[in-house]
Length: 273
Length: 298
Image 1 (cartoon, rainbow over the protein chains, first blue to last red):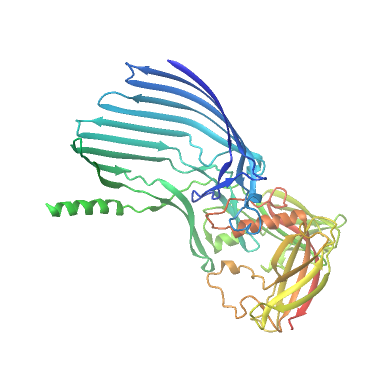
Image 2 (image 1 turned 45 degrees about the horizontal axis):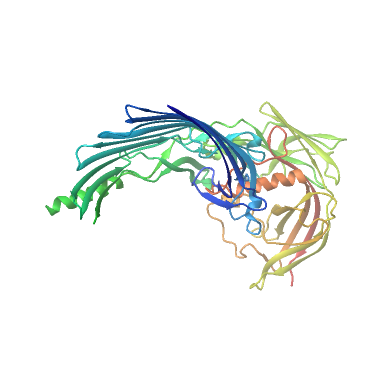
């Protein structure tokens, strides 16, 4: 058994922020400027590692805490294009973030059946004076649970089967909770920042590999894989659609979720010579 | 041997085409705290008028019944200028675009430059308050009408005024076209825009504008064709109000504008409109008024 501890301090000169709150995962990269200071991250971690049965099994547990300074976000109410004659970085506000969690890992490295399971439990929060009334809120990509499971079995030198299963808690969004009418306009009331969670993301992929021919001069293998075997409709983004006509006095709002990839089977022929 | 292979390929393609990639979902949104929305105005030289309504949950149906229900008819509103206090009651009011508002028939409180007004509204078991000051109006240096580029009879009205440079304030420009012809007459002053004086404090500003959109125009499914394309035509009689507003009310209008202009856009970051109503939503604004009339001529 070995125990390892580490401390890392990073400075990053490229910043990521996303504009959209409820929808497209639009990510924007900013360089550091006079106004946008470099991000500073300090991470502390402590882990215990142990192998069993002559290195057939590897296991580890790690805990970490990370402190982030000079984080950026778009200010509330920002709309792209509204700062056409202004520096984009005047629409940014600054704050800090912190993350902590634990990672558990078990791997079978030897034998006909190999694979590993990883589970991470984590919290990531941010706090900005100008956002959410200065209260801490969960980051967009805060992932409470993250599970990865990979299994490979070699039936014979020619046939290998593998399966992958991933699970992660959904992204956090800021959604409208209410609305009111002011001066003939409909005004939206938003709930607390990133208080709403999309449904969890999970999918299973299966794959079968058949090595048809393997000689010194030529190798050929066929692979059949199926992405998202049970065709889960994982949310990509959510939007609200209004149907109806207000002059007829009837408008209905509904929430719609858009997903990207259903079940996708694929056949691949790999060869090398 | 060939046929089964094709079928297999077809089957692969067909499998994932049967699954739609968009579906309606139920979103469990928490209901918002019920709040009173105050839309209060006091223009210089006029009596105050207030519209009260309530907020609703996001998925509540929007139909004529719920729209009417969102307005509050039985509230109690008072406005005080420090010396006099008027109790306003819900009745027909010519100055309100809705035709109704909380007003007092024989008002003792009238908008006056430099005065601070306090509003209290009680409805639905809640009480909200707000204060606003009427910033003294700024007179125009000049006003004229000019054709727009590539137009010979359509154009903007231009006003020139100098900011006194004594405080942080906002300006709200409102206009309406008056006409004997009911099709061309705009019965109410509508806002062209509002801005703050931070960038031109103490200096003269030229501001040009065309017609302001009329009440509810954005909500109409089919807007009537405007032969003037929103411009003012030569010969039109236009009334213009240059209103001065205090900074807190300007900040409210600004955040309101940000919110309504980003309505429905998936690219906008969320913002809650910050009003100047303590305990409620909305805004109460005192307006200093400099009103002019111009006939558009070359």
